[in-house]
Picture 1 (cartoon, rainbow, N blue to C red):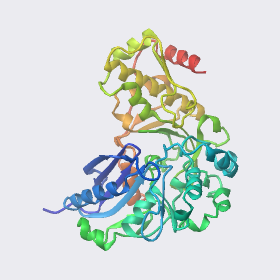
Picture 2 (picture 1 turned 180 degrees about the vertical axis):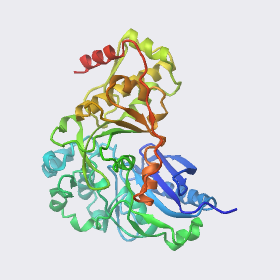
Picture 3 (picture 1 turned 180 degrees about the horizontal axis):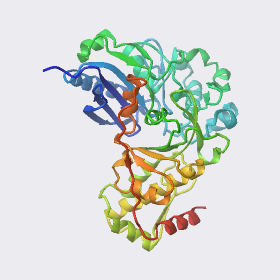
Picture 4 (picture 1 turned 120 degrees about the vertical axis):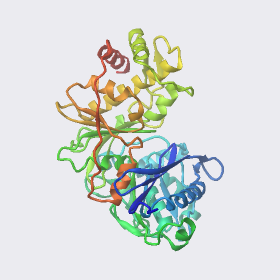
Length: 457
């Protein structure tokens, strides 16, 4: 049997799950493996279990090598994460960005960090500003930090382990790190002030092949010796990639643990730090206004452990009774992270109604973020990527609130796999399989939104 040729492996590391996906030359998924992204609680601080991911990934690649001739590997990962390495490997574990860094360090970092006007990176809780992580690590672990040869963004760490070539890349650098100035396409003053310029490897495009797979990994996995390892990309920017070739790029809702609203082409002057609005850098280096909330985490909090998809009757019942979920149900960022979430009105009475309430909440929050970014012109298209595309009501409810805009969903439920494939097949755009959302007719839905806004604001 002839194996499919020119296949791609995408390593997709999100906050909640790790995926390994095998795609053929046309971008069709041939195989997929998943594993939880676990956090190790011992050691100097909570950190990612990189060695478990590494062994799991190599085992998966060995399986994929028997199913196709793989010519490229693309790392795609979460943001706010970096690896400190010397020539041998990690000098400190890869810190979990949800770790609450010592409060005593906060005042010190407030002096060091660049102004929002330069970075468009809002001051965020825990370690969501990568610069704060690095400053704390340099002060708390000076002996180890002196050994650092490279500060690698998380996609480039995995590329380095696979092929041995260090690189930097702008989508991870420009993701609320305080390390990058998206408008100027250069490092921020923090990098110079801390003396880190020498620690960042040369900038490479996300689609650049860095090297072929290390010989010992060829033996371990059975992958071809000419299999190339690409530089890699930040996950929500992978979701955005397929839309950048459009003459009028749509707004994109990348959904997963985080829901990120991205508005390519809109100005940055409307961004507000207090609302957790930021500018990301896309794969082409362009600054993109964004706003986000921890939608996947909040959905899970509201829906509960017993997940049961809802019916339109469940949605209507909550709207008729005026049951509102008012943010926030996660403290890790978002426009209302400083508030404790609560349910106003009669609580949901079943698992299906809890699912319905979580859906209504995430639609309203997404709609709020799109409005705040200025995505409200007639005819402006909005595309939904990621895990919420599997929710039968999410896109249709959003379409009902925005009748003058086309709302559509893609066929990529991860929101990142297609972008990873595109990096390997640069300048090739996959066949679009968007599904236009039909607005759901739900009496009282617009009034429900106004009630929610009244309580919220």
